Length: 56
Image (cartoon, rainbow, N blue to C red; front, side, top):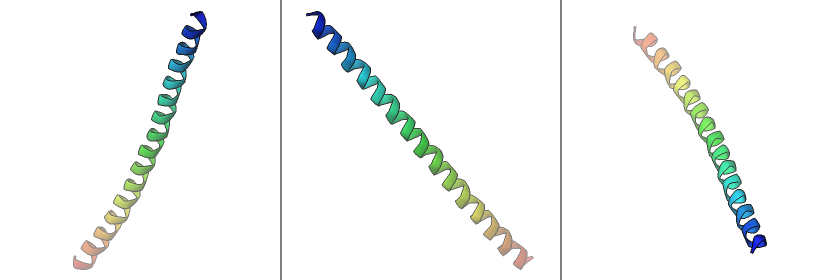
C-alpha cells in the first residue's frame, strides 16, 4: 500500500511539472506574439506617417 501512495504522489508531481512546462511554453508564445504585434504596429505607424506627410 505504501508503494501505491508513493507512485500516486510521483504521478501528481509529474502532472504538476508538465502543467508548469506547458504554462512556460504558452507564456513564451504569448510574449513572442506580442513582439510580432508590436513590430506590425510599428510598420503600420511608419506607413501612416508617410501617407500623412505626403498629403500634408
